[in-house]
Length: 167
Image (tube, rainbow, N blue to C red):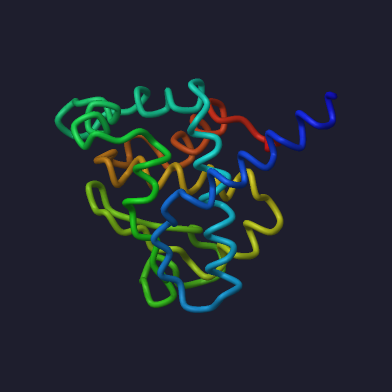
């Protein structure tokens, strides 16, 4: 009986994913787009957990509003909001140039996240970290400035709230 329930819940989960709108990924090559889609799927799944969703309460925009307030104003939760953000090819973006730069970049309040070319390899090697990076950048789209808090501090908070290794 336990196996049947497991199979049924898996089928229901797959069925619900089919009805869910897709992410807005505008990355040139299929392999990179697939890496971004996979990371967004994982990030969305993480943000359904209340502990992870608290990350929106941990940070504020420049005016002092908690990012959760900004989400509430838009009428969305974290997973739904991920589907509003455009994840675009950052190949030509100045911040993406060079081998050791960021995996993705955006500006506070912008609705476009530029995904750097090295994101694909990072997602393959460390999928948990890649998911955290996309959540981090999503926080910026809601108005989170950087420096302060530092980029490293933001990602560490996301990893602490959203965990690693959970699928």
